[in-house]
Length: 209
Image 1: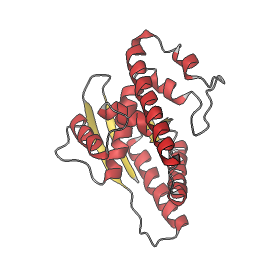
Image 2 (image 1 turned 180 degrees about the vertical axis):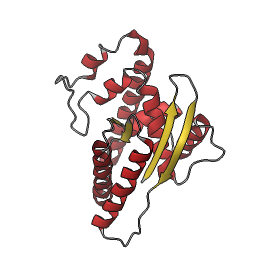
Image 3 (image 1 turned 180 degrees about the horizontal axis):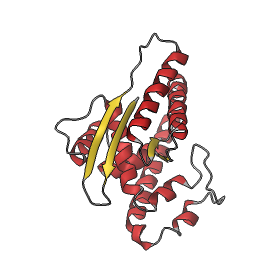
């Protein structure tokens, strides 16, 4: 599991990498021990850097259900460690993270890694790839979190079953409260997401035919 801590000085200003890395455990270690180790190391990161917010990628289930369950367990440990440390949690879909970092929601991993390296002014790409993914999520929140877009992303109903605190499940309803300042960015996100939905429907139709 990758993790990263960055410092943001506001929209349009330089981002500073504070620290980053990955938590690894032996594949033959019992699951409960692996989860405990992940929790222990994440708790140490939270205590050391005391972040203002945690940006987490929403879980996306693919055809490999076993892998999805393992990821869900690790993700639960991550959320628990942040909650115990009093760190507010914000969630973003892979599409939103890629769109924020690379400008395109279907960007490949190498494109995302290049942009993460550029945004943070790193001398070389972060390793392993999970670390780059974590930094990308942090960068995404640094862009959205400094505006009301983070509220837009984290209020509506999602695939994870989240419901806005005001009971509003429609993005259109909540978006009306964001104000005109973010209208252009919001429209861009919506266009990217609609394109993604169309491509997903087309792929599903091709598989079924």
